[in-house]
Image (tube, rainbow over all chains, first blue to last red; front, side):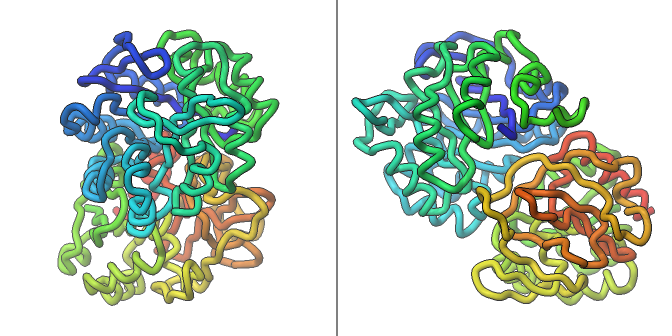
Length: 251
Length: 205
């Protein structure tokens, strides 16, 4: 695991945390939390607008502009990216990457457009996965709407269309703090040659170690452990042998 | 004043923010007069090499950049900006670069996932003739990389700093007199990156 990413899901200007991407508990002010995790030497920040499909999106752009004034690690913006203009606006605000889910399901060619204009490194293919029988189905709208797409096949298609990395969120595990869907991560990892980041389920340090023992993912996105002050960035990194604590050197 | 070159590509906001954060006066511009009045130039950029060069040409920036760099003005290329300092790139066909540094950009010859995204340690190249100016106080710090193409270290003499990815030695930093380039993003590399920008700024005064 090379990168430890702080994931902040945002609703109406407040960081929230749900279970299975649903229901919300208020956590705090996004800018304050971004600065806190940056000061703890988090490797990246992921800001997800959880109601972007329902309300205006300008809040998050403003928030990213504000965060970028004092936070100098990569920032990914997700939620509500529907067209090239949204990507342009996200980057102009200071984001480095956009995480896109629904818009790619509706219009897969958007992946090629984003990659050709801004480069693959700018596009994170965001997949919300739910277990279905022996496999997983891709969902949109915070795990509420099924797409009929098989997650592994969809991951391959996203890679082929130009995504530079994949963010795989297990809707089943998200917010439960019961551990990652390790099989899901392993299946996606085996299917593609671009970096894969796991999200959803970490509730204790052992969960990171379990994931790390069975996969060689490039990153992990953490919400609950950080938001509920169950662990610091340094403690999370110490649980993962390949992450590097920028203050303490390689472990 | 440091001029960040505006050619309509990539996340320039963060470069401006980082320069302002360290107390530099930074402007985003493509005006030749402003470029020549600046104490230093930063060529940022992400994305495809061909598209980057096309946009430089679209704004007639190739000639002023070349002549200002050759006249001794400090110039820092970042990521795609670093790659465009080179002679050529093999990204989606062969493209000619600015040619300020005589290296070629190739797809990283690694048996590993690409892009290389993440933090890698940058150390002084073993054969660097002098201690790299931008690495002053920063040897073996971590910087943020995101790239699939790059300059392979081999025996290239102007490579000042190196990083390793999947066993491949990558040129992380080049320095040729007043021309500097970083494959990584100092504006996204936390405190170490800010220190590197301070080092660059001190060369511009």
